[in-house]
Length: 145
Image (cartoon, rainbow, N blue to C red):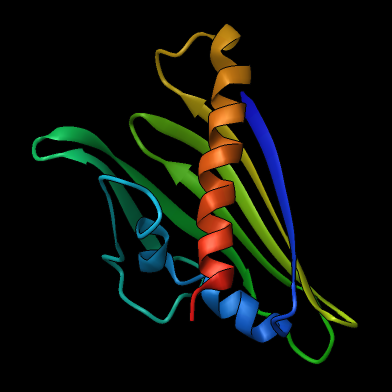
């Protein structure tokens, strides 16, 4: 299983950082040839499902994820979101934690991924690629308006 961790510090208050990093449809912006839909509808809560579709036309794959824990940050307490990846191609889990700091907030994103048919020796390559791609996504979400 490929595992990677991304951390960012931002001057944004925890509630705003949380709003941005859990805006599922906005995750598609920084990733080429990807769209995100939320078939269960918003607002997000435990049980919300969203699907990242990566590809061009009929050539691609869906990465459906379900929110299994949803605790937004409040009154100095960290926000915690846990996702289960339930696709035919991508499996695993992700967590997004947003902790308030004296200067803003600290965002920690951890992914544990398994791609079907990808042998275990490919995990370091997948971790490196994931760190770069998801790092760009996180940077764009936290810097956007």
